[in-house]
Image 1 (cartoon, one colour):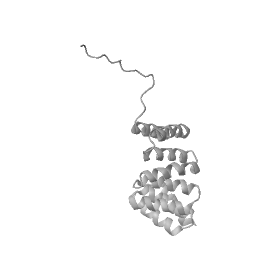
Image 2 (spheres, one colour; image 1 turned 135 degrees about the vertical axis):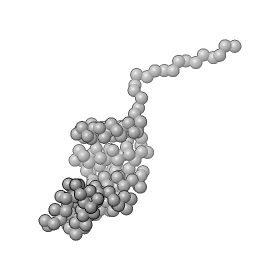
Image 3 (cartoon, rainbow, N blue to C red; image 1 turned 135 degrees about the horizontal axis):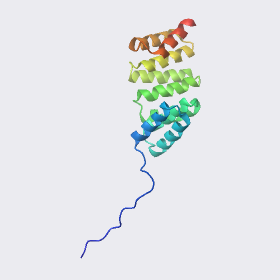
Image 4 (cartoon, rainbow, N blue to C red; image 1 turned 60 degrees about the vertical axis):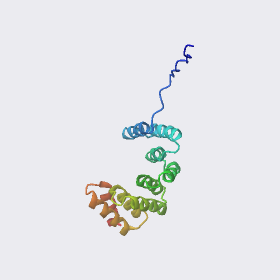
Length: 168
């Protein structure tokens, strides 16, 4: 008997779904281009396509944070923190969302977690300094900013936090 014939593969007019890495890179390109609404839409699609990927949820939270939607950023960033509790960047971004909402104690806890995972990240130290200053803890703000500047003397955000702490 001749071999059974199989139907030719079906060709779709739809492009293949992007990989997680491609989706993240696309979101970052939109961030660099200053397109937070497009970034949020792309990140939302990414989070739906990869619901177990912390990076997808973090991207959605960052998109909302950049768009000035800190309250809407918290949930996806909390989800990312549950999926990747060892990711210092997730905790830093969640801290930024809480700080923007003036939830200073929650933000400080997030920055502490981030610094526990990566104690030498000058950007997190700078964010912790700004949070401490916003909360009226000027000695802590000074200490965090000084640590940040020891690691990256050109970090403008740390200079600002240090100056604000000194001015109060």
